Image (tube, rainbow, N blue to C red; front, top):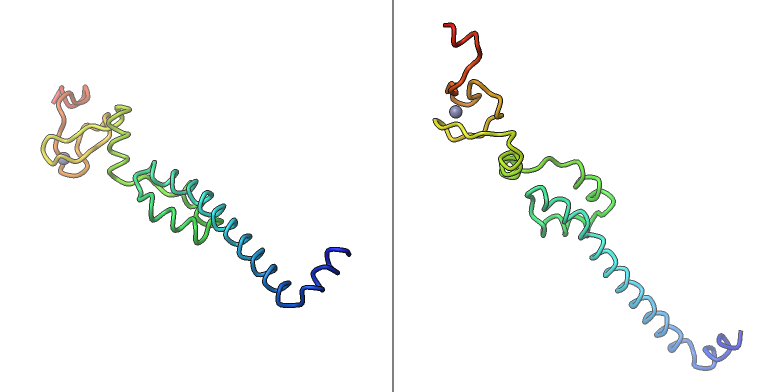
Length: 124
Ligand SMILES: [Zn+2]
């Protein structure tokens, strides 16, 4: 109550200024916190080959939506190829230069037959 009485002594202008200053500081802190939080979906999305900056903006605007979306989005085609080659689950077709599963016998893009077919094919 003492503080309130003191504030009253300064008049309504000072109180209004103090309140505005406090609100400004709070909203500034909130903005910083959101900016930091938005890094989370941005990092997840960029690990899947998507743009870090666009996802950071998305996170800043709609963090609640961006976070689950970052978990759910598929990696880009390029990122899938990179991780597929690394883990050995993909191979490159020599004819059309597309990536197909390493167990594939026929390329799904151009129909190229890879060497070392099945036993059945060898008999023919
Ligand atoms: Zn092919």
